[in-house]
Image (cartoon, rainbow, N blue to C red; front, side, top):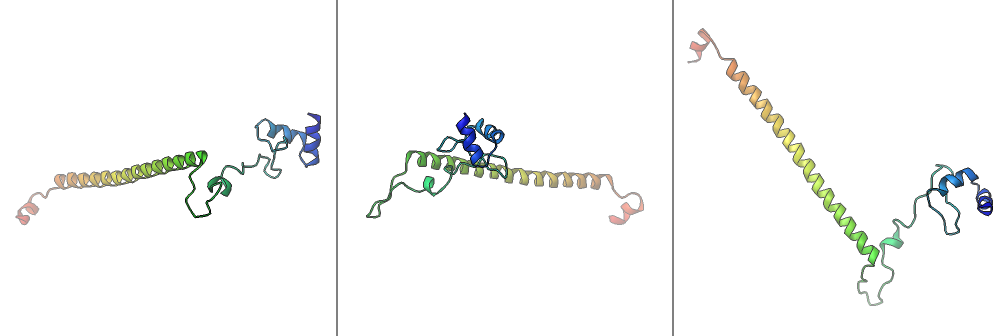
Length: 130
């Protein structure tokens, strides 16, 4: 524990910052916690999305397509599911907007009809219309 604190103090981190980041479980390859000093937060995992994770591990000399890796295939399936969900939810939002617009128009029409039925001409105005 003492050597880790010395390493952290040498890199510009205080032991309190080290302990704050250490409990989150994010560590570098050397075993010391990685901390962004400006924001006081642990830095983002660089392996989450990068060309190394999205591109194939190797390529054939004759130009054949390389097969997907296991994690790459899983990521593609997840992204397709997310895209499908986005399309479904956007269709639901469009349907809700159209339905609300239609209901508003129907309410306005029924209100106009009700007023037209209530306000009928009387007396000499009724005779003039005919």
